Image (tube, rainbow, N blue to C red):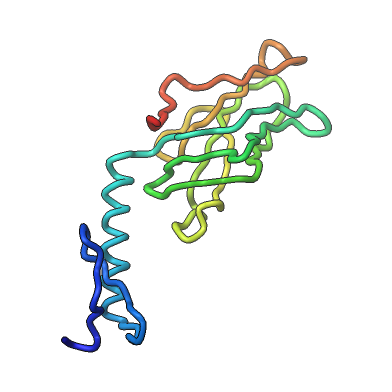
Length: 159
């Protein structure tokens, strides 16, 4: 057997397994990485963008006006074909009081190797195709107690 080919492999996907005494093969590691990447691409394409689990939303009025998503985890989701698992709070800085704000999560900085990094942004009108809309903060009618609403088209991944 060629010494560059690993002697063991997984049953289902034939992923190479290095055994004691073998040297790491760049070719075999590339096969392994390509197989995993293609399987993840298929899985996340089928799932589509959406929220699997989320923590609790909280509006903070003083000293600034912001929305935060807290919990452990605060968010498990798929955004732009990348799995997201976030244990730390996520925050949106809202603008002036008395408006309606659409709060999004996007994956401009999100990478498969670090699925906790993401960007958040706020818009005063709906934006399509630029991330996942997670909540709407409506501060137009009740300035003492802003309403956190969830859009009807917000997509949840089934558990």
